[in-house]
Image 1: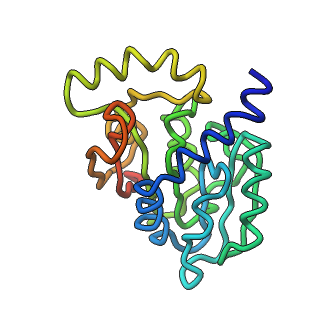
Image 2: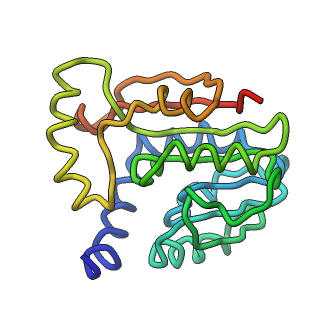
Length: 205
């Protein structure tokens, strides 16, 4: 999986995440971030162009993938805000408590090994009043699509960098101690891949 993970998967991920619908989601939600921002799963840096320079002082982008961080580094040069890129795992954030004013995660929790732990770590590093801005695909709202998602996920994980199709993001947020204002609906694409959760969540301090 080394060649696939290092060379092929970053290209496929970027192509998938540059669809018109996904770019519109980024354009809608990323500008809500403010202050010092943590972006969880920064990937190739597709969100960096959408941060509002009038509201954001710095973005710290974290990702475990060196090839994706290299792509993000190229995009950080033209970003409207200062960017620091850090290699690391979401389940063990290398930052002190209360380091950030807001956090952003788009299409990354699906591939984190332990999303609840990752969200608990985000809670730890958010300052009081801070919010998580979320766009993520996950478990659909009808039984037929859910069956497809659960059937496909084992194989999909192997070729998709650990991506799960069948995570209930609302329940994961609740279990991690968040109060969420999140909507979920189908966007363009195959129904088993395009059921998308969008909104904000705040730690239940």
